[in-house]
Amino acid sequence: MPRIKSSDPEQSSTSKSEGYPEPVGSAEPFIDPGPPDSQEPPIPEQVWTFRGYKLHGSEFTTAMVHFFRAEVQRANVWRQRLDTTTNWAVLTTGAAISYAFGNPDSLHAVILLNLLFVTMFLYIEARRYRYYEVWSYRVRLMETDFFAAMLVPPFQPSPDWAEALADNLLHPHFPISMWEAFGRRLRRNYLWIYALIGLAWAGKIVLYPTVILTWSDIVDRTAIGSVHGGVVITIIAIIYLTLLAVSIFTIGLQDASGEVLPRFGGATTAAGRSAASTQGESNVRPWYRPSHRRQQLLTLIITGHAQPIANRIMQEMGRGVTGLNATGMFTGQGRSVLLCAVTVTEVARLRALVAGEDPQAFVIVSPAQEVFGKGFMPLTEEKHS
Image (cartoon, rainbow, N blue to C red; front, top):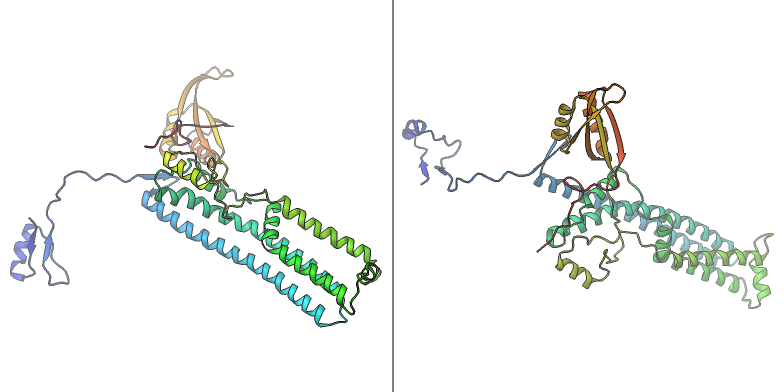
């Protein structure tokens, strides 16, 4: 039964003797909640400890949310830069065509010069598109493997999604090639601009200053200075055929995570994804993300101070250690060999721990093809009900 303490001064001495706190700055009565209804101890929240950081689950989620917002903002900035280069191409094309048709005495070379500018803008936009994909890759990775897992519990994220995100942060790289970026922007925007430039150039040749219909007259009019008209036509034809070939042969390159292409590994249709989610398949992952994680290593530590080193590795790095007894064949003295599986980002920390306990220790770091078990990939596939 909660007790109510009045703010009456006459009751202050009694209240203090019973141990109730004084209400401060308010005339409202103070309500003592009394003992809790349940005496069960609270369940401790899981804490990740690594390199001095102590992170609760709620803090991890908050950090991921802020990181997601930052990556979305960065992707939006680069997406706007893509629109900027397209606008440059449209404006220069419009200006060149307007000048060529507005002035009957102007040369058709003005339109061809604009062709070079548009190609330069296409290259710049393709390069920007690759940068955009770096940030878009991270956004899509968090959408499919972090937030989607919260909304649809059977759709469990791939075990290596965090490793893929960490590797992208530690070693940023372009998710798509220059050819894919070039072809994708060409098909989406620039083919129409190139088609307009080609029609405007042909119209300028045929209609100005007078209308001509014979092939010989067209060849003569397309000449630029001392360059024969046939050479100019051949160069223009090669340029357009090359652009068409690039747009066709790069269709099969689909590594861009920012594109809306609903394909997942092992389930290429919406029905397949739904069935996979219902059956609880844990290997369903975004189609654009290959299975990837930080390089896994096996370290062998030969030392005469095995226990102190093992304790520090287990306590400060959270990694398991296995000890073996060995004999140094040169000295004939007994030694201990510690085996510890780590990732490539933990080698520097392991080296510092070993050097702090035994500067004379011998450490061997070998690449491991796969490491299964606690702290790495699961040894067995998880089953979902």
